[in-house]
Image (tube, rainbow, N blue to C red; front, side, top):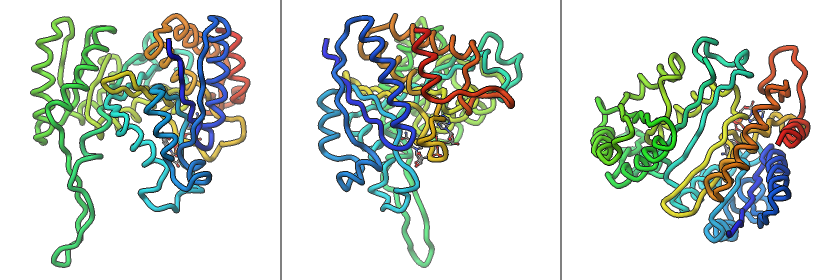
Length: 357
Ligand code: NAD
């Protein structure tokens, strides 16, 4: 099997947590005698420094060619002053668009071991929170045209356009139905159908698609009610599917249920083999270069890659169980530590996970 992987560490803690993920992947390939072919590429601030642009053509071609990408994070104060079209975040948005990665999967687990630092009450956590957010990633308000800021008759206005085609809704909803089938068979579609035409189309399309998935129970929720339920009654959800802006906000809210941004992995898919795996967090300039970053989100992103792109289910499970075990054995980076608890650094957490694999 082709096991080419483009590694893009990016900036700040991106480089540190990527080192951890590669150590974990190396342990898997040694044990299973696999042969991952790593290729390194630049994206973000480091690419601006080296090549003058945040997404060099070479990186884009490497990604389109190899198809499987493991990414750290990009950006930081050093590049805050660059013009908007050159910002590191734009590079990532362009890469997702060029690869047509329309479905972003964000699994959220609230582990019992971390219950003391979670914002929800113990009784709501039960045996643990386990849900999956599927966010549409290449359409909606963030990409719709026209957009801009203009002045007419002395009045300046800013405007954006929320637009979805039926085909765009259908393809991401299909991904969510398939995932719900793999899990508990429950899918909640989230929209604002009482106010927005795009949401009415969203609801109509997901409802029609449900006929093709008799073993999935679909329900609908308005975004405002969903935001409340997520924090007040998280076990109500299993798989959630929603548009770009609603998914952006809900998945950060759900991040609180996992204890820290450093615990949240993600994966983005299109209709072909192409996939991008990355932690949800950014470059954390406040702790970069200090061996303080939590490597778990990055390591779990690598586990998602093994499962979904290479079919290595047992290996992915072994990594996830090793993470759970390290947490149960009391290893804590600063972002997930209770007050007064002993903390460990990035490398110590990585070693604890490696030992338990
Ligand atoms: P951030 O996610 O980098 O950090 C937010 C807070 O969470 C910080 O206090 C940070 O220390 C902490 N944190 C994040 N990840 C952590 C980890 N793995 N372990 C321990 N603590 C962690 O978000 P921000 O501060 O808003 O952004 C910083 C930079 O990252 C900005 O330049 C932003 O544009 C960029 N960014 C990039 C991505 C991406 O590349 N996908 C995503 C978000 C932000």
